[in-house]
Amino acid sequence: MKIIINTKSVCDGQIISETSEAKCRLFDKNGTWYVVYKEGNEFFKNTTTTIKLKGGHASVIRTGDVPGKLVIEEGKLITSAYDTGTGVLEMGISGKKVYHNLSETGGEICLVYEIFGNEIELMLNID
Image (cartoon, rainbow, N blue to C red; front, side, top):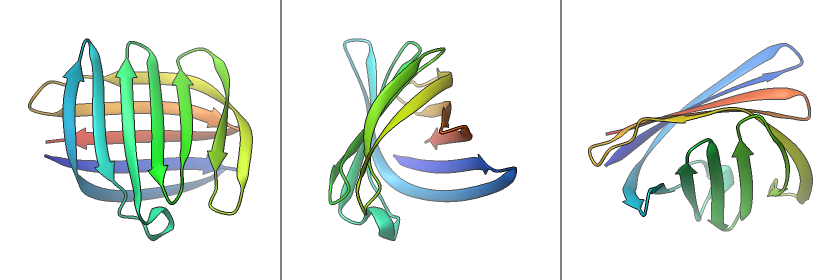
């Protein structure tokens, strides 16, 4: 399967958009969906990302050269440790939207969250 990752960040009124794609594994385990892919971005070289989804809760877990865990829950503020590549930050993540319509054949994921007052929208299409 293939995943197309569209990221849109709004920082100080400036919109930054990025698109990338990778091969991925998609599976459902006891009602929780998992998407696993290797990052293609040079910054995340040798890093595997796992997105875990259940209801209005999502975890973005990175292992490898740039490890980290981002927890997003709709309507909640959650503190997570995040490796920027130059150091680890403890940051508050305010979950705005956690949505998916996944099936064994693919689908899409939408994660909207705010970090330090900057909104980030992550759209993932899998087929």
